[in-house]
Image (cartoon, rainbow, N blue to C red; front, top):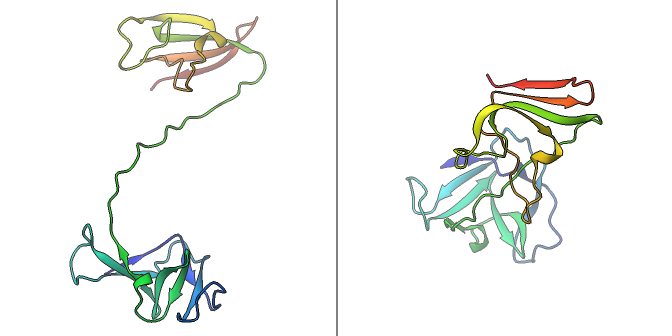
Length: 175
């Protein structure tokens, strides 16, 4: 057995309107305390670790979590709708995420000490020599057909974003 928190899903006192007459149970809502376990996982095959192809049930306060007509409900009694089979499906590769930032008006140049003058990555840096470089911020990116990482400067020791014409700005150093 194990206690589980399932996205704060708790049983309510209301009978769901979608529950067929042959079932006795209540609706569930995602309104419980996020830190408090609510459901106890029971392995139908008995004691031991949950394994692939095991059937499990989730119980709380004499009710069992089930799915009836596509809706999650808490049912009284033993029903097939309350038994879940553990399956491991091949998962897709993780999503690529990134971030987009905006600079305040006036920043036009970037200066850095590291690899350059072109973009460089851990697997593509041999052609980029180490030195002090300066260029337009707009020249550091490339609009590839497929959105992807670009403009990286591998092994950069420090970088400064500069305002023109005075050359003032913000600096970031590697520790």
